[in-house]
Image 1 (cartoon, rainbow, N blue to C red):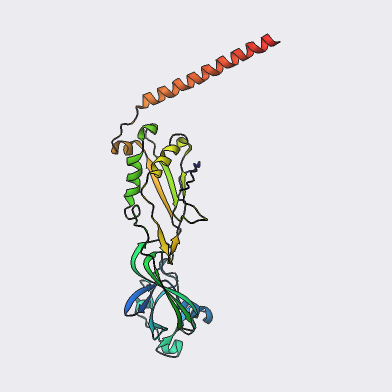
Image 2: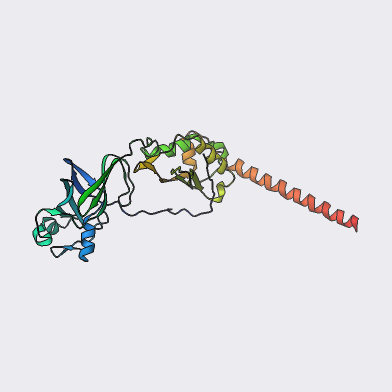
Length: 307
């Protein structure tokens, strides 16, 4: 395993932000109603050069549904059909509105002959959720290649052998693991302050992107915490491994760890006395100062004797 430890001087701010996860289209496939992580209707709207059906605009009124609608599809006779279109927001007037497929497409049964490309159907258990677009990973993926609305190829992908999610299945496990395994005697007295450490872990584990751990903290812990957090993480349980389309998928986990005297006490450790800490600090400064005074005094005497 290759690890990379970096201590940065930072003010605590969120490291990343995410777009909102999107409500997927629906597809009926072999009698099952499943989620479709593709939007074939977008190609129709693009060719039409207007985002409207029956002159009704499809507008993004929800961050979870930027396209403004949820389409229902069905695979029948190896072809992709559009079954219905619903608005995906809380406007009651729009929810009641029914689209006239005959006026829009010229027929009630709508073959998606405008669409050529690939669509992704997901099924089974959701292994991990990402708050961004269609990024969630499921046990099973079905990739269909389509030409002018007709299916030309099908690929079934099994992601179920992803590693069990020890840490992400319970958000408190990681913090408990860190706090329980820290050697608190190596952590200086913090008084009323709270120190925040950001641990970023890249679980891709690919040949060209080795496993990587990045630790970000304040300079206060540069000497005292770096080796300790490295020791704790080196003894961790296995990190999660997720697969998408049958291949290991790069996932970045970010955890914020807070350290203060209340947490130290919670985990059964007695904090060092503040007076003893500062006493040792003052003694250390006196020793260094005395040493420097003696050094410069004898250096001056040496220079005088030489001349």
